[in-house]
Structures are given as C-alpha cells and as structure tokens.
Length: 61
Image 1: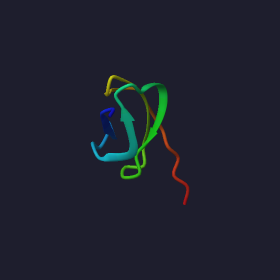
Image 2: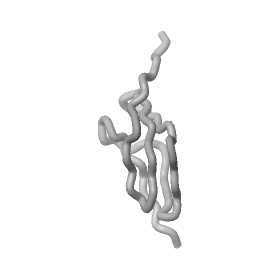
Image 3: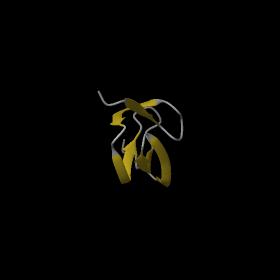
C-alpha cells in the first residue's frame, strides 16, 4: 500500500482537503486553504511540498 499524507497549508499550517501519495508529482498546483481562504501555487514530489508562489484570492461578499 502506498503511503499517503495530508497536504498542510503553507501559510497557516492547517490541514487542507487534499491527500497526496508517495508517487504523486504536482507542478504549479493551485492549493486552496478553506481555513485561511488563501491560495498558493505548490509543487510536490516524494511527499515534499514546496511553495512556488502565493496567489491573491478575491473574497466576494
């Protein structure tokens, strides 16, 4: 069985709604955090997540 881990928000550190497996590779993936309502571009390989860029999320009322 492949090892899986939850992706944590790089800004607030809380768990997001996404899991990645050990063989998952992401490039320029827009990760949204429901807690802090921010979005970041991330890359992931071998369960290591790195932030490429923080995106500005517009919140509409």
